[in-house]
Amino acid sequence: QGIDIGDNTATKLLLNFDGTNGATTTTDASPSAHTVSLLNGAALDATPGDNAFGTASLLLDGTNDDARIPASDDFHLLGQDFTLECFVRPTAAGTQTILSRSNTVNDNYRLDLLQQSQANNRYEGYRNGN
Image 1 (cartoon, rainbow, N blue to C red):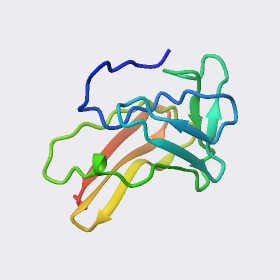
Image 2 (spheres, rainbow, N blue to C red):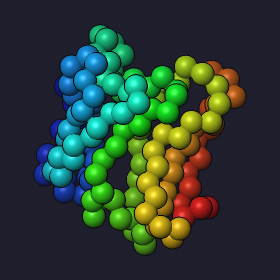
Image 3 (cartoon, one colour):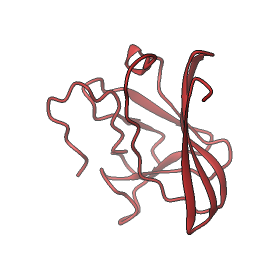
Image 4 (tube, rainbow, N blue to C red):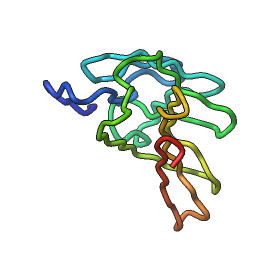
């Protein structure tokens, strides 16, 4: 089962990745219920045991995959405290962007995974280029 946040309206996006194997859309479990479109080879993977929450996990092959969410005031975080949290299982070394949003030069953020080897992982977060 996915995470249930109850009446926590502070959560703006919660992706349990509920859906069927190969699906290219999913709906977030926050009160906003954003529709997420999976593009360029991104899809849900319902292989038993591969998911942390929900009925599936997000499968990315590392080549231009994309999960898109329409613009929303929920994601304007300029001047606000916020938390990004995720579970990832990389299968290759290198720098991989886990999440990014760019509205303007002064209103953007990104979370990257930098992996030199299976035992050496580092996350870096950027906000407004820093």
